Image 1 (cartoon, rainbow, N blue to C red):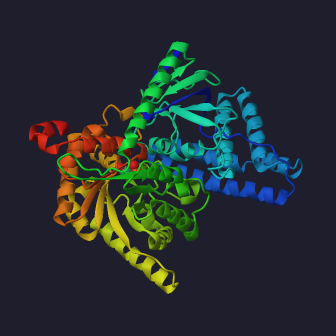
Image 2: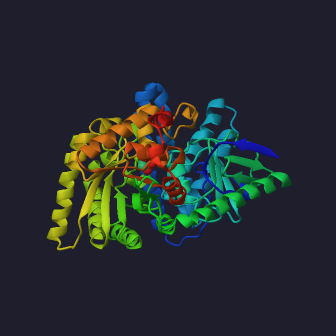
Image 3: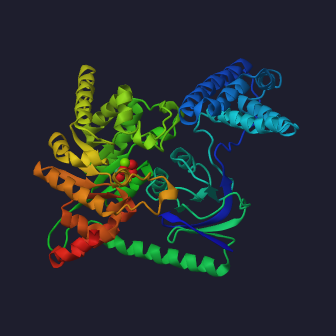
Length: 553
Ligand code: PEP
Ligand code: MG
């Protein structure tokens, strides 16, 4: 038995066979086709997209490593256009009548082998380039989202790392858990895993290159461990722990229907963070006071084009109907950084987390912005809806939002489409937003503090970077000072301030959040009842200022 330890991101256990996932490890299907013209067009279109992507990489490489080193991307473009490659693919499509994916993969493999067998070291090294090119083409041909990560039997995925879009694709099939060597607890991948209720471990100290494929494993999502070839004793121990935790969950049930009020009468709202329709059901099931953060990206992540206004409206209305008269706070599309799909047309950036993401991306795509906002307005006819704007940094952002908001309403009026009122909330997740939170609170109806990003931007540490995990402190005192500043500033304008980052569910901090005056906490649905239990059994009047100070210093 071997044990690897990392950070648990979802409590639960899973046992099954290990399956190693490598990026772009697409399962190429061999299919006979009849329309060879259409298939040739697919191949040529994919080639065009690949050439554009490589061109962008070239530009970026010139800036970073200079002309000479960037030249490899020029070679890639030449190889992509190379007659022997192209004609071999076209031949398989036209004369053998097979699909473009199979044609690219077969040609790629035979050229790879051919280069590898050459005597010249330079030519041998070109095998990696041909592999790179055919993988790129396959990714494009599969629309970047089609390459499902599947298994025929219950399997635990292990990978170097998983991007959010790869994590979304894990749901298809028999995937019951995953463990990655990289990643951090507040990464979007971790949030998605929680959303999907997959026992998962990130940042595990394992070498995925070793031959683990097919071995039996046990994931202990309570202690953040993965056991390879677990012995009977370990299996029994982990199962006992699971049973105990499940029993605890049972005990929380008695808090359903209760108010979130402390023994000395201080109340706080407890909302749910949701990122899928399943989680909306969990929010209802766990008696959430509403949805405090609807991460709407999931509607976009498994598509190959932007959803239409009607498609969005259907999803939002469904959520609003489920939440009945309770608050539903829908966050506008927060893509960029780790969350990207080919069709978003995001630029290649050196520091994506500091670049085109959240509201900044939406400003580059007013059509996408307005489509989403109009769908939210329409859903607001059926319930209590708010919209949350991600990644606000300046008052100019707020001004631009209000203009687009006005245009969206004017368009709905012109189309005679009925809609309801919405409340507007800013996500406070940049230090600049904290520092001007009084001005933001003046313009908006409420604010929600996104502590996951606020911690990353305050500490200047990428929340997705496992290498930095020992430096990253999601509960650093600087964060609490900021939270206090935001709450005080917001209250000056008689508006409410909520906390929607992961630390909202840390029961060790609940008393502090109550004392700081947070109006609400928005947490993973399964954390609602444990949190309510803490609130209901707390007597703030019995906690001295000294004790509270100790909680955050
Ligand atoms: C946050 O940053 O704290 C937040 C709520 O948003 P996300 O984790 O989705 O970036
Ligand atoms: Mg955020």
